[in-house]
Image (cartoon, rainbow, N blue to C red; front, side, top):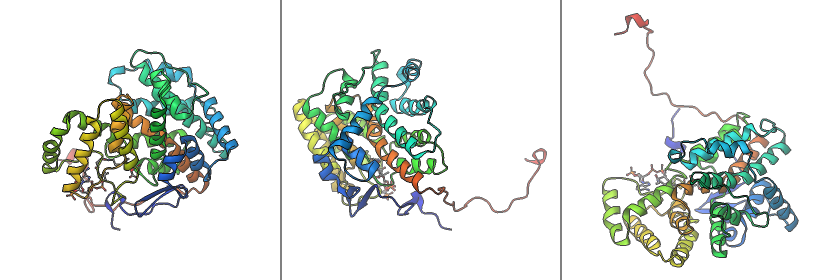
Length: 372
Ligand SMILES: CC(=O)SCCNC(=O)CCNC(=O)[C@H](O)C(C)(C)COP(=O)(O)OP(=O)(O)OC[C@H]1O[C@@H](n2cnc3c(N)ncnc32)[C@H](O)[C@@H]1OP(=O)(O)O
Ligand SMILES: O=C([O-])CC(=O)C(=O)O
């Protein structure tokens, strides 16, 4: 048995949800560029869960179901108020809240297909409320109830700030949600599938996936990018900062990808939005700094920016706190996790690979009293 480090290149399952072929990303065969330019996030959720685009009636039904399920049990809200609040990262709060939600869902452990779909709707609906409520409570503010006449993207921004967002903010945020919704067998999706392949429940699968997304080599990179941009401070400082990091063999957050070689097709959409939004907010330095970093990194190494790089300046321009960037990734990606969880249940087999043992050979057991 020979191990492949990081399972690189290993095909671990079949899936009909999304694919990356020759650096082209599709959801159920639809190119990510078309979906980003033309689809609402809710249409994409429907597409991932049903493997077809919705009709107007089907989309209206899904939107209604999401709107009807956005409120949180009082216990989850109250639980946020018991944290040593300033020290808790919102990804840890989200991971805990999703796990807690399972305790208040009577169908949590049901393996019935229809019940699992209902749980998918509940989780997709409630995840925005969790992130925005936590963000407000930690600032000493009251959570804001969703507005049923707003779409998913607008509602998130509204519940976060309490103000109805501008058209351009909604357009940018909707695009970001579409771009992050699914990505074949990325680490968090694989985690979700491994978890539910034991026939564990949907809440456990999503909780596990949130844990995997949190790390800086995966979803946590978007917050790390903003930390780097803040440290650099202005476009003129970018060159020396990046060259020093590269010389020290340190990673530049938001660059590189396990699967893409020529570049991540999602990055160009976020780059475009970053340019537009930073101009509008009168802070073009974030975009200028980002393009400068891209220029330097790509001149040194074949490492194009990934989805996390320009999303940082986009979210910053939307006035979003930097530690909410990764939870926002989860708000979108939960749609993909849920699609994969439902797909896993529909054709399940325990996921259990092997390890290439590299420890000591046969050893004689020595009683504890005789060990030196
Ligand atoms: C949504 C997402 O999850 S997208 C990815 C988000 N993560 C990041 O942006 C973090 C920064 N990027 C990385 O750490 C990596 O590129 C990953 C984790 C995304 C992919 O990693 P892998 O396929 O395992 O590549 P690995 O980490 O082995 O890197 C291969 C080589 O490229 C280098 N490299 C890879 N990414 C970077 C980077 N961002 N900056 C500098 N060097 C890099 C490595 O140092 C290594 O060099 P070496 O061969 O000289 O040792
Ligand atoms: O696919 C990956 O490895 C990481 C990624 O880009 C994503 O999850 O969106």
